[in-house]
Length: 116
Image (tube, rainbow, N blue to C red; front, side, top):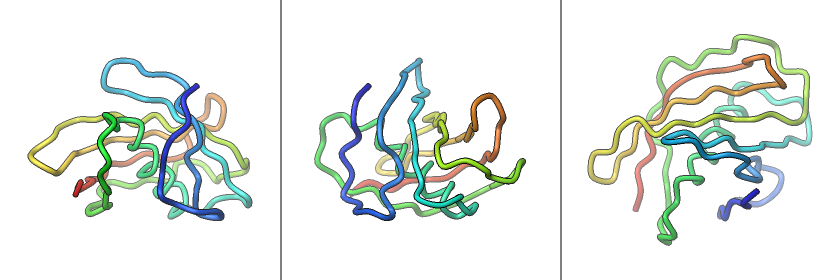
């Protein structure tokens, strides 16, 4: 497991460790202090995109959300986010994500991160 280096502070630091990397997909353990809202799950997914960091000291900004779906009511404090890098154009990277509570998919969607 590799810890993520994020500029966030508690209580909004959700993404904790990269569990697995498989091709263009990283699985990241995320933790919450309370049962998360959909907005918290999306923020955790955006934070999980830091698993693609190549040692560069850059700031990432969430700029676009698309097709965000809550498939199941959240009921846990710990999840696995599978985030996939789909396409990169200059400083913009397009990601898809799935958030799992064990084997159950809780939320899915796409987002774009801009790096500076």
